[in-house]
Length: 320
Image (cartoon, rainbow, N blue to C red; front, side):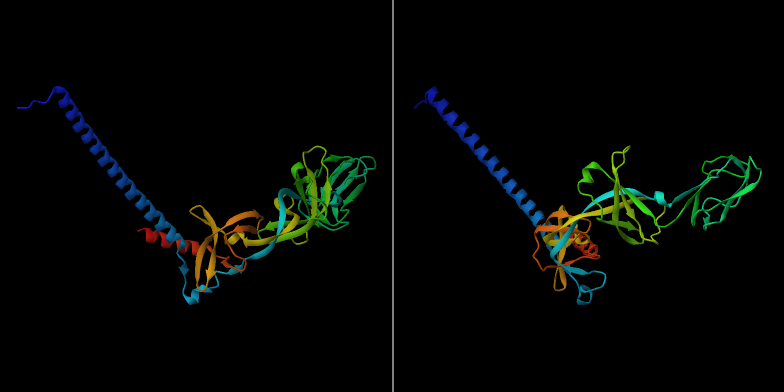
C-alpha cells in the first residue's frame, strides 16, 4: 500500500488547522457584526422614539386652544435695550438733613420728641438751661420732617454739638455703585428701572459723583414720591445704556429647555409643537433668534409651562 511521506502528512495537517482557524474567525466576526447591527438598530429605535415623543404636536380641544391662561405673541423684530445691573442704597440727600445744636453750653432739662417722630417747622424738640445765665431756651425743629437721630437726653450737659438730626422725608434718593468696568457706559440722564414687590419704578440719573475713598462712583437717582422704599434699603436696579433693533426676537418667558434643546412652543391651529431655536443676544425680557423660527410665527408666552408639562407627560407615557 502507498505510504504518505512524513512531509506530506505535515502539509495536510497544517492545511486542516488553517481551515478550522479561519472558519472559527469568520463565524466569530459574523456573530459580532450581527450583534452590532442589532445594537445599532435598538439605539436608532430608542432615539427615534425619543425624538418622535418630543416632536409630537400637543393637540388641544377647540375650547382650550384659545384658553385665557395660555397667551401667544407673534415673532418679529424688536428693540433690544441694553442694560447694566448694579446695586445701591436708598438714602436721604445731604440737603435733606438738618442738624439741631444749641448756641451755648447748657443742660437739657426736658425732651419733647423721640426718634421716628414727625415734626413741623418750629415744633419744640427740647428745653436747654444755659450754664451762664441759668435761663431756659428752646430747641426747635428747623424744618418739617422726621427725627432720625437724638444724641442727648434730659439731664445731659451739651455744648455746640448736634443734639438732634431732622430729615425731610421727600424726596428719597437711590445711590447706585458704578464700578470702573461700567463707568464708560454710564452717564447722567440715563433711565433707571427699579423692580419692587408693587411694580417697576422708573427714574433717571441726576448726578454721578466720584468717591475718593472707594473703588466706585455713585450715581444718584431721585425716587418718585409714594414709592414705599425704606431709607437704608439695599436695592438692585437696571440702567439703560442703549438700544438696537433685532430682526427676530422672542420673549424670555416663552423659552423652555427640554433635553438640552432650547426653544418655544409654536401654535398652528389648535396644536402647539416645540421648536428648538438658536439664540444670541438678550436682555431681561427678550432673546434674539438666529435660527429655528420664521417671522410671523405665533408662539406661546404666558403659562407656556403648561404645554411643557403636557409634553413631558406625553413623553413619559410613550416611553412605557
